[in-house]
Image (tube, rainbow, N blue to C red; front, side, top):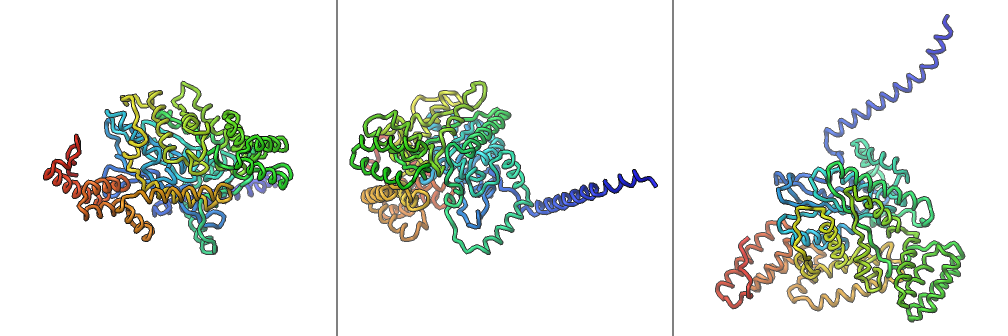
Amino acid sequence: MNHKRLFVRKSTAPVKHTLFSIIVILLFFAVMEGSLRLTGRFDIPRLIIPVDNHEGWVQLNPGIATRFLPGMVDNRSIQMPSIHADRFARVKPIGEIRIAVLGGSSVQGYPYPYNVAFPSLLEILLSHSCRNNTVQVLNCGVTALNSYALVDLVRELLEASPDLIIIYSGHNEFYGAFGSGSSYSFSRSRTVTRWIMNLQKTSVYRFIRQLTGRLRAGNSGQVQKGLIEVMAKDQAIRENSKAVADTISNYGKNLRLISDLCAVRDVPVLLGTVVSNIEGLSPMKALPNKTETELNGMVREALTALSEEDFERALAIGNRLIEIDPEFAWGQFLSGKASLGLNRRETGCHLLQRARDLDGLRFRAHSGINDTVLAIASDPSDRIVSADLRVPFDAASAAGCPGYDLFVDHVHPTDFGHYLIAGALADAIVTIGLIPSCQFTGTWLSWEDCRREAGYTDIEKMLSLMQVVSLYGSYPLQSLPEARTRIQAALSEIRLIHSGLDPVLRDTYEFWVKQKGSFDIHFKAGTRFMELNDYRSAVDQFEIALKAHPDLPVIISKLQEASEKLNQDIRMDPENRQAGQPLIPHR
């Protein structure tokens, strides 16, 4: 007997069995994957999808967030975000400048309507100044998405032949999908995260996720939660922790990958530094190293001193807090506010920035995020450049660093803040020459002209302020010391706007509230103006409604009818015609 051969056979048998089992499992999943793909029910959502009944046209997929976020996180149902379905030609027309802007809810425009988000305002600014071209800016902002998701979206956007890709992202690196402090995260390792994201693209994974999601939903008695509340899992992340260092590092690697992908297609990338509320917002969960009770008493004393404008006393307390615990955000914040009160702007803004970086609840991007943006865009040989948006925000702020004068909350700019971002990006595009075909005329539209062109009226302003009230009544802003003051300020402004509305608009708005927002206010107001034979006001309202719903036949039809009626009135009574204003064309 050949004992050596017998030994080899016995030792290799388990290995062969293991290999056979692996092959069988792989074949099973391959067959399952192929079968599921044939059904088409579990395909990965695509960013760009066809437009029904419009051959040659495509649009952004409003449900793209489902590609990265499940319907439930930690057995809690979440509110799934969506994006505006921007439409554009599949084959880019000659002479069109196509720009795509990627990021989170600030890009989307929250809490303002789509037409006042900075990508829309950028389109208006460039369209007026690059008159030899048609300009289209695609708003690809999705709430709760961060740089991991943007890498995947850029791959698809490049198929749409963009002339420029703009990235404004950084606030969601901790609590966005796959973020290091998020409830929907698998690892702080970028390699592991990218591998899992690729796995999620398979139909098998999506089938299993949908099945388990239904089972968990059936066994869960919890009501639907706000996305931001569900996603923030680790709410005590110290600045000197490995989580912060890893997050900033992974952010930089994702931006470099985006740059590399765009370089292959020779598409330039413009990175914007992210801006946040520094001067006005109290620390978001300060993390003391010392006895919290003693420190909190000092915080309350300093806040009282600030309210009494006793800045010297507030500064002394703030400095004492910094001596006791340099990593306690309240010390930096109080000293910063007191310094601003004493007209020490540079020192005050620096301290307030330090307070922001010491947040334990990391919804505002750490300074390291912007440092990374500027470092990546520093090589002139690359086709990746930056626009430091902090500069115009600091210049426009009364305190020298932005607060509630330019932000509605912690990271979302005011309507004028969106205009500042759009203007700074437009300046960068022209100054650097990112779009050579644009023959710049030399001037930008003013904020008032820009908002008028966008169709942003007092009605939209009022509705946005209602969202602000809701913001400060929910997580995480409801716990801030200034939450009640911000709610009262928003309500006061709503009442002021309401009192100044045209009676028709006021009545329409009040009916809209009773009907729980079941119709477009401007369309309904336009219809009412038609009944009153006020055709000019009707045209104005229908045009505003059309900006929000550009493809609704009923609005187009009503606008044409109102325009024809107005033209008839002008022909019959030329004195009603405004000087130098042409007749409104039939549409």
